[in-house]
Length: 410
Ligand SMILES: C=CC1=C(C)c2cc3[nH]c(cc4nc(cc5[nH]c(cc1n2)c(C)c5CCC(=O)O)C(CCC(=O)O)=C4C)c(C)c3C=C
Ligand code: FES
Ligand SMILES: [Fe+2]
Image 1 (tube, rainbow, N blue to C red):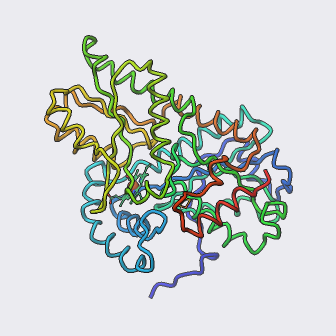
Image 2 (cartoon, helix red, strand yellow; image 1 turned 60 degrees about the vertical axis):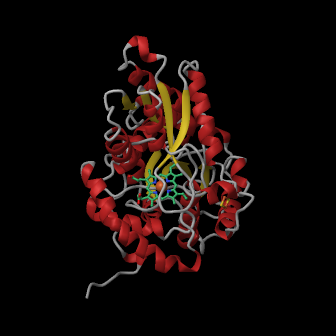
Image 3 (cartoon, rainbow, N blue to C red; image 1 turned 135 degrees about the vertical axis):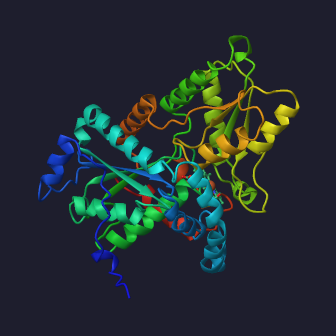
């Protein structure tokens, strides 16, 4: 029988991002770091939060099992522990096929690690007072998991009586309680488990890590610019005389109507991004916002992306440009659902196109660094919006984790 070591004794996954810069390596090599009680100085951990995706088809089962166990995403109440695994097991073969069709896995880890490491290099230059900036990635449903990232941070010298500042930087530009909210609740859970006993005052003045949060950035000018440049590049593929008449179809992952009606901020924030991008483009093209990737039988926010494409084609509008607007790197929903299903099966793959995801865009990475720099300078723990729960929220987890992050003294 395989022995399962207690979590604290398990070896860390080789998680820290490859090849630290000279400044980062110098800091890591210092055996005992000075207490960093003044959070205006470095080092600073920059932690990218996202859902993650399976890097290989073998990881799909675990990925879906964690996803269906997440009560912040799919609330199944007391039956979560029974129904979650059943649903994930039933869905695994279909989703494995989809990941196989896009090259065997999700590229989200590769892009997240690249974006975070490159952003930290820029931050070391533009914010020397908070350097070195140490890059970490914390995924909700795939490796590197939040727990592993937290243990790695402690092993690297953050916390453990030595303080140090960390920024939880959501990689969802628009806030939803089912995405960023879930990641923050998970981060808070591991903070309580791994540092809770040490914490006296719960605000970082006791040598625990001081956390602040970049919880949303739907209209950041750099994000808007990066989207706009990718749209302009793709529009050039249409003949000049048709270019202004191409319909821009912004597409975001949908939400169940139960989540929308609970008062989730995501639909309004996605619309804010679209509005800002259209303004930057001079409102030169007609556009619509539609919603993709609904799962299961309950009602979801529409119109659906796939039916919108079919309906426009039926109306004679065949020049359609799809723009994934709520995710910053490629994933199964761009590479499989949009490229292979929506475009591939439209019968008009020559005129229905998709804008590149932001992935390694230098404009985007500079935007991440600018945004992080403003956040570090501001010394606020999180946005004003984050303190407010949804009118229909009944979750104690939300209440506790929001209280914790909003009370951090950075
Ligand atoms: C902003 C993005 C996303 C929101 C909002 C979101 C909400 C949401 N999702 C589900 C259920 C599933 N999502 C799944 C995969 C998945 N979801 C997103 C993004 C958002 N989800 C992405 C990018 C991915 C793919 C990850 C990758 O390829 O790397 C899945 C698993 C796949 C499947 O079975 O179809 C499920 C299930 C709900 C219920 C929800 C809102 C409550
Ligand atoms: S569900 Fe939105 S704050 Fe809890
Ligand atoms: Fe999803």
